[in-house]
Image 1: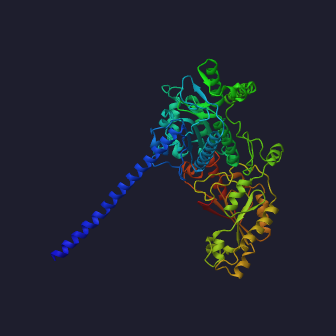
Image 2: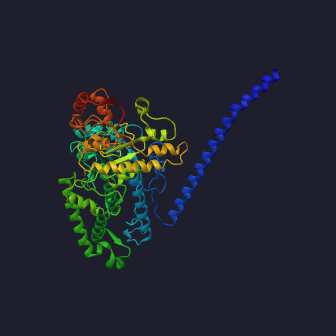
Image 3: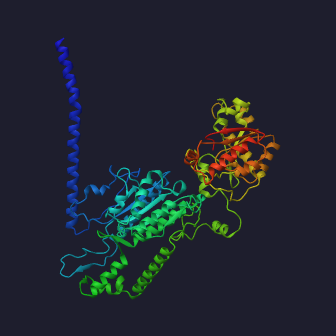
Length: 612
């Protein structure tokens, strides 16, 4: 008995020692790898110093999630202060997002700038250099303007939570030469929820007389705003515009005009914004003191040479072709400086809205940095008096990826999951339970893909446009019904061969007997909705319409449908505003008016929730 207990204790002790031994070995191995890496870096630096080369600083490479090495810092921060390292100002890309769009754009810009900086370095390493050496210096090419050190890049979120970009970090950190802000605007022109504390603190700093007005004077800035013009000029990109005003009030200098994009033109305007930044970054060099424009740096070198403070190593060769020895280039430089000063004055005079009206297709990748070579169709459309089409190329692609069959320029159909389920013999929806409606003979359709709400629970990924009125080209109802039924039948044929789908049920499903007017969007916004409903009833198709209780006048004028649903998503105006994010400022009065109007309707009516 004693031997068994003793043996058990030995096994327990062994089990406790194994993790300890494993942890010790892992720690020792990590230390060995760290020392080995450090020795390799020291050898590389020594070899580079021996060969007279300059140590280049590589842009920091973030992981796919946009986070840095655990604490919000870049990889190079871990080796800060190492021998041979040259500290230069960094580039910060800071974003404020609600639906992750600004975050994606920030990392897209990070990749573009990283590639640009690498290519710029490679071109300069392969090109000829104009070496400038101080009097009595024993080394040559030590301060060549072609030896541009690459700045590190950071991607952080504008928030006071965690090790991200808070107001204190933005105002007090002297590590950045260029700060690029990509900011979304939430409901009523406010900052996204995760950035609201940041916005309040920055506004406090802007209005606080104790904060110096030149706090941000040593940093260069650029800003790209994301918003929706449907919320009106008062709220459109309000947070981004506030950021511009607050930073400028604290001494910030903006290197490109602020860009305020709406949902329909986000991609083309972001391409213009990126191209402008790439052009500006290509004309500057990042140093430990800040950002210097290359031509101005060359002009300063020329003045020092004329004063005898420095001499050129290859003066004879440079007399014919150096930039600052060419009279033509001097004149060109002066013209560029005059143009730049003129452009800066214009931007200061009218810095908002100068590019936010540019609208091009998502597929227009070849526009110039001014964004003037966009789609010819859009240019013609802008000059004509005809309203635009609701479905632009990017929206078409997004909806088609979600399984929509698009009809005309503003409508679509999609197979309901209950239609698919009944085709496979797995039961139908509540209409089958309550009214004995066969679900696989029901077509789900919307005559208007636009909506007046931006519900937080919307399962359509907010791809549909929003508006207070139907401001697009109107397709005839006959076209919508004919092509809608054809599209529905085409998608039904694709169910052939699916397990459980019998030829009999598939044949029945080809004959549409019911139409659910729901899907994405607000069907009652369609100006010809009454004619469309009449056409449905003439063909023996019943109509089930869902509306979001924001159009009481249209609801009053609506002809009787088979069944009318009023979607009520919250019991109080505060909750309704938070959940549905309506465009109308009198949203609660409109909702109550729709409720009163529903009482006067002779057909079956239903109060529903979560039915956008």
